[in-house]
Length: 136
Image (tube, rainbow, N blue to C red; front, side, top):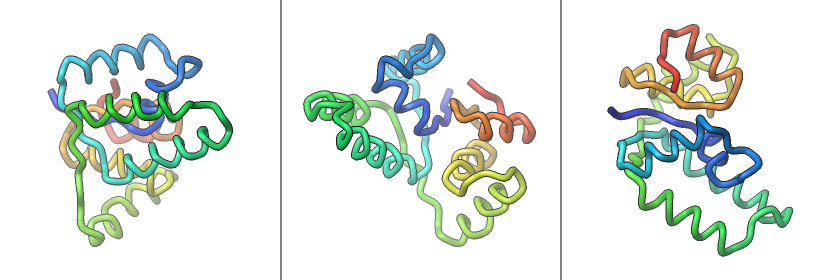
């Protein structure tokens, strides 16, 4: 079954001090080829975190390359929606649930496709529950 996950889950896969049994189970799911879909913003969010932690010396270039190779080899589809949908649908979800537009893009995707969502973000978790989106 297809599912949606956000950058908070993704980055937990990269750093030992952020991983949990739940995020490891989600990584196993990816490793087993379970197809996932993410909004277009996901790649930019992951790249931004990697830039920031690289500047702080928290990740080596070799570890970054290894992590990105794992992501690139995984069954992850990128959902691309037109700007009109962002300006209408994602913005509406953000306003209704007091989320950033970035977080709202994950929730809107889950809602639109009827897919479960994996997140470590408390506000996004709360909003998903309020909308009836299943959480992993």
